Length: 356
Image (cartoon, rainbow, N blue to C red; front, top):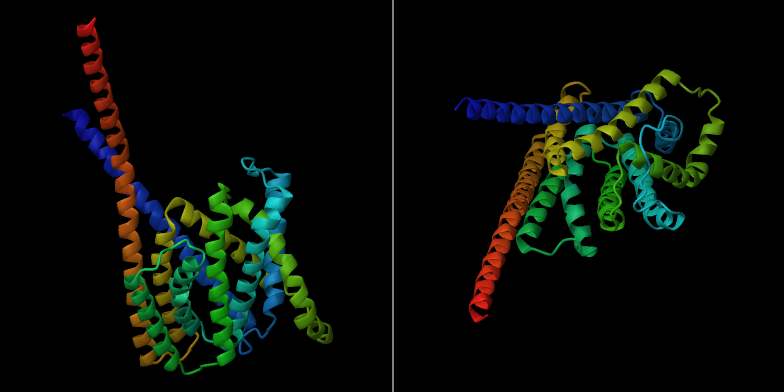
């Protein structure tokens, strides 16, 4: 009895520890995501720091991430690069390069949207991410079409459309930029499954930045040279503010690590649920501190989208539970199958003995 009680206590402590760690990871991710979004808005918004160069800001982030990842991998050898399968040149070109290109476009467009739109409205538009991921997954045959799921996607889209209708600072260019960022990011997420996961390639946070950041940086150089470099040359008053851009880059690097830490230690579904909490916090912060205008129609529309996203996450959770239940019952089924085979073997052996 004493042993049973101690083991039960041990199990409950283990479960409690796991739950607390999950909340800790979620808290870190929400804090860093919150900090990066508000910090980027502060730098790019003409009414705040007034440095409207989103490609340049993204290049600074990617340069910093590339350098830190290189030092950690090649100098300090904190992590080992994947060897099975090894990252060959052909594999890098066929898998990492498309993902890096989409990541560059997603970051460029999303950072550009901060110049034209409020933080609260951007978070409302980001509610379309499940819609984009599901639609693109169907195109890549990673998901099958279900009328119930599509109805849910339409309800999310309707909610976002209502929120956009009620936006006080609606800007068509800003909306197009943010929708483009959502589309590129959704395609990147699907391609990670298609190009990496399907080939058995698993990357940790540091190796992901090691491979993807330089590729992303290269794809940003061309538009930066054409769009922003001439303006920066003419801006003789500009000086590189190391405290601002340095701390901003550290936050961006830490967020990249936190994303993979959260998904690796919990699940992508946990991140989706935490993202909804973060969005509401950002909307409240944007309204109360930054003094962005949030209308009743905004909240009503986002409320509809929120319910659709919550239902989508609920369905995903039920699906994951069903898969886990199948995995747990599979060993029992295999053991039962083996036991039946052994018994049949014993019966056949006895028949053979009788025939002899």
